[in-house]
Length: 124
Image (tube, rainbow, N blue to C red):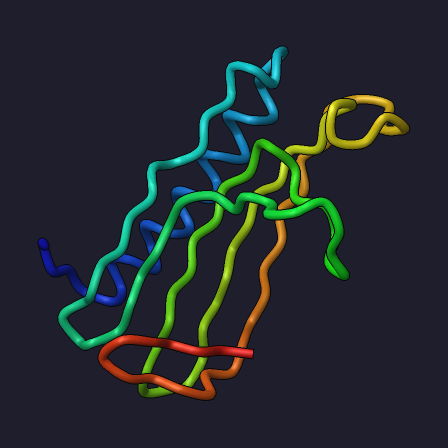
């Protein structure tokens, strides 16, 4: 696995988010939209970077419905104890029948790391 710097991944994450947003906003047909492939990288400074997409499991949840077309990147910084999640969600009429047109929502969430070991990172 190729190791890269933390700053380069933050920049890559921002560019990825902007590119996905621009591509999704220009699409006339949501079927043409693809999410980035699943990726995991351990950075040189020991931090972690992930990207891919969310997939809803099960039909009931206390959380919102995850649209079929989405992209996510997560960066966990061990030193600061913070994980940052960036999402781009494309909501279509297939996801929500009352949606008047395809809507693109960018979101960012910050989580506090409560556990970090060689096998798990838990953030809430």
